[in-house]
Image (cartoon, rainbow, N blue to C red; front, side, top):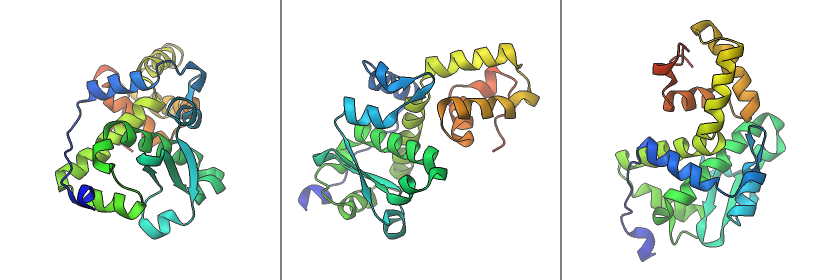
Length: 207
């Protein structure tokens, strides 16, 4: 328990660094990208050797949809993410977010052998560190599921064919959501992180 009770160190990654990490994550993983869609299951299993498993009633018991035990390279997800097709996009993002934690937050979860120990490790964080933990993991997950070059090229194409105006926002976000198989709020956040609220006429501030 000594390792678990140590105060973990956590940093706030700038977006440019998360983009670099995402690019490195997808290197030599071309077979994991089909069209615009990143097959995050294949990425986890083939490139990282991580096994995806089910934890029944995880969300009900612990309030989380997924977690990874790094020492065994095993990623557990709540059974309803797999049982209900309505949660497909949430399932994909959960996998990407846990992969992000695995890449940039290993030092926080080292020594954790159960979900209880992982939750305890997170409880040692300050409020600011907890924010960095989740904010950085979500931003990295977005960059993995929506690679910068691929989504920027697709957006440029849509601007040419549909238009670059506030009135085109809903249509473009809807198309990108289907292309990349992620939720519309995730698309909106990704476009904000890439600066499209400044370099386009899209209305990205409203959820």
